[in-house]
Length: 77
Image (cartoon, rainbow, N blue to C red):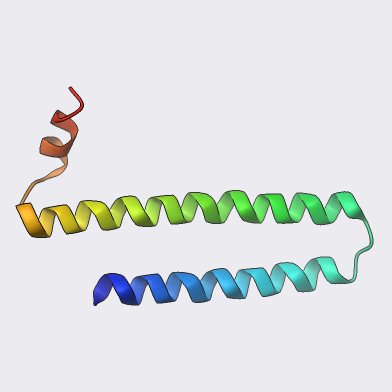
């Protein structure tokens, strides 16, 4: 349930950031500014979600198998 709760909080933060982004770009008619703001938002939240899913994978793997970071990294050696 903890992961589900964090997922919901992340979705709410993403939705709030999207609403703020829309408010910022709504009154400005400069196309390049709108594109840059949307691009930066996309880059930030893509990285944030990638980190979220990596941490979820790690936590679930530790909870299920009792492995740690060194054992997971040893797979790639």
